[in-house]
Length: 290
Image 1: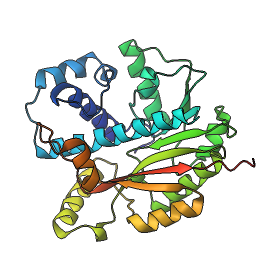
Image 2: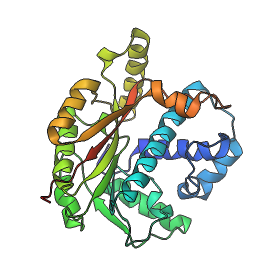
Image 3: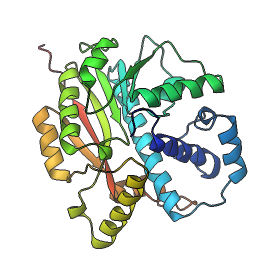
């Protein structure tokens, strides 16, 4: 993304989450603030649009977005039940969890890490929508690949002596693979008290059939024209091996083969997660001596 303006893809993802609330019944991911955070003009436009213009491509995008959000927040609640007291949202975009968290500030602190321009834009949208920033939310402006995420988190008050859960959605495909791996390594070192992570990746084209490789090439050209090219991808087993070498455990992969039966096989709106990407979930065992 460009340094002087917010992420276009963050806005598109937020619109897809909002449309899910409006036109997909039943909802796979319930976010009562998804529409409001976009502002009254955009909200009214989406309400008037309804289901007009919806198509299999957009339903596939929505399915992938809401599935990853649902899997992430389910894993977060499980982590909090097991003692996590910090939630780090990397590449937060217009995520609304901090505004609708069911936990007190003493139970869970939220750190939103994002590009400074996107974060500034989000804060303006919150103010326009009359949404109050809760005391447990900590803003952490970071330019991925140019700044240390760990140092920024520590400066913002992140405590490595307390268990933490991390989410990193919709970012790794915009980064060189080595930057993604370096960030994951840094996070594993930060979470010395244990916790977990959910992040998503673009699948290595070599693992896709010819039709999906063609679809991926078309999408790559589209995002490149938007100024936010997809440059990072991973094959499942090398990524699992790399994560385990960093200290991550219980590495799970959620993809179309197991997500669609779980959420979408009987969905009346025909939502289907695409096979171009995967959602990765892993735990971080405590490294403190006991």
